[in-house]
Length: 171
Image 1 (cartoon, one colour):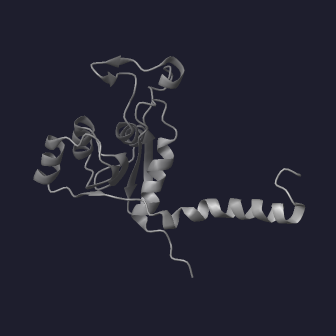
Image 2 (cartoon, one colour):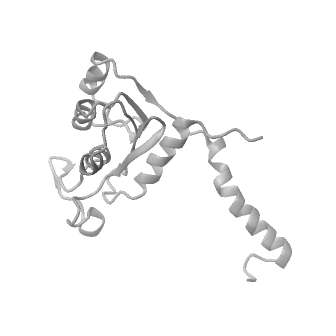
Image 3 (spheres, one colour):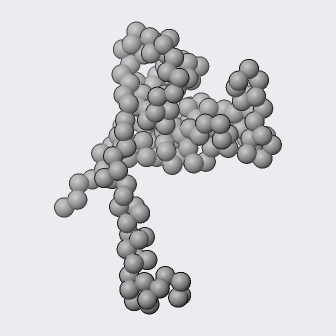
């Protein structure tokens, strides 16, 4: 019997999937908010609803930051606010370590643990706040063991077609 994917791998994979929707290509970030092993919200870097996107109009950069973009963590928290979903006691899975402003927002929203995939300009004050408030944070590495099976069935189908028809291009 195959082992099930661990929760932290599953939720981080969801954050990675969300990052693929980012409309600011300077840094594609995804965030998944989880409470009681259930996804309650997700977000990715993108523009305000109804505004133009960086991928269409280019980034609006001032002082080294794209002003058009709402960070993934903020989009996830705002989704909860919009639909009346409580964030107190939830956990967040983010593809990149949250910036200082996002970290303050997450802590203020009651996030009780932060999981991240990549270090990214980890702000010392953000780390100080986490430690001062005794909020655990953990870097998660995605284990390829759980994700290669997503691709192998596709290859197996192609290989079977090739064996049956002699070429992938025949049909």
